[in-house]
Length: 375
Ligand SMILES: Nc1ncnc2c1ncn2[C@@H]1O[C@H](COP(=O)(O)OP(=O)(O)OP(=O)(O)O)[C@@H](O)[C@H]1O
Ligand SMILES: [Mg+2]
Image (cartoon, helix red, strand yellow):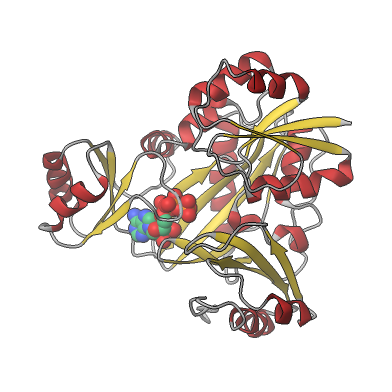
């Protein structure tokens, strides 16, 4: 039985393990946050991420391959592990994807369109960037942001000071605000032999910076957009020599696709694939890192994933819906926290909207589902 080591011990690790048990894989999680919620497998926790910790050595020695479900990890930890065991994806993917400035530089180098940006580390630099880029802009910390945290939208020049004092005193990236028609994401998986498979584009609805609804295949995607997205994802995963899942978040604009950010791991916008594709993103990640053949990434029919955030809601009634697949992450309720998700499928997008609205009505605090605008 192969043992998989995972850095990070949250819901993504939990779903990796749930996908791995039928393949006779076993799991050992190494948490650096102090709040592991995975609820299965072996778990070690060390918030200091001390490289001399004997538990770390035990972790490294007892697994066949190490991966990560979380990119906000000390890079030295990944590099240390890489010297002693196999790490997939490598520390290079982690290094690039945990720093928005490095990520953007890679998009630029590969000719992948991305919003105009400046990297700054003073309040003066912020003002200058705003003057050069024009308003509005989105200011983000270069590292550690997630779920829209560490971001500030500046609409008037006077807000620079407030933005700097709220998230600044460190390196920031200032991005031109994109008037997107919608948000999309694409998930690719690459095996050690450079074989690459790509899932269909997902359409994502964020509210207050947090993903709420994700639909795959994204409706109304023309062939050119689909092939453009696929080629960006393939170029990135190949260039990084990345083994496992890589996610690319995109903005769809009137002038084409613009890359927002990447994640070197399984992604919330790929949870639909558990029910919606023959081989889920979790299973494909495990297949890639253990040298098994990659599985089929096609969507069987329109599928929507609804996040359960902050409050669990009426789970009893959700379970009574014949079309709702409920996934709970064994986490305590807390505002803004991802506690689970529900997957719904249908034979048409029209029917899917109806079903998604029924699910959302049982989840308090769910923002209105925008549905799909007709062309
Ligand atoms: N340049 C931009 N123009 C317009 N909207 C933006 C821009 N950058 C980010 N946003 C909005 O903010 C959301 C979160 O931004 P981003 O994906 O960069 O941050 P994040 O905190 O890493 O999010 P997550 O980890 O949830 O993907 C985006 O999905 C989008 O809705
Ligand atoms: Mg994002």
